[in-house]
Image (cartoon, rainbow, N blue to C red):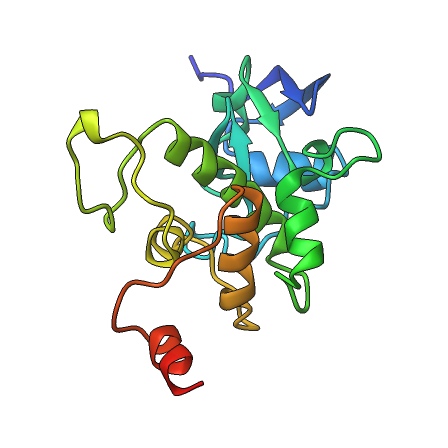
Length: 192
């Protein structure tokens, strides 16, 4: 007896429910873009390497090209279309707009969703590979430029808007991205 290769699933996306039949091999990315016409989430490498398809699943960053749609059933999915509050932009979106955290814009939806998830992880005290003090009692690490770059390292920008992206993430967090001692920014300040 052959096992079924498709199912009817209900996805909770941006506060709305969508019921649709999907082949079990359909990725969340393809369900969003091809079945639900939510095209803000971009298809970049389709291998989980570039981050262009980053969405939030239950508030955590997920590359939608590597997650099956059936695995998202019953979970809250937030795409770039769902991060604003009506006409009011999310603070990360506003910061990207104000500080030119984009150029061509292709990676921007994934960058914004990733930044929202990264800031939530930081606020919760999750360490990154750049975190110096891993003791739980030390609380969230300082949000340095190095810390932001590490937390955003899964998202590529082919236009190289990285300095503006780091500044935008810092602004959205309500801080400025401080450079570690001995960096190029320090050298530029000393030369001025």
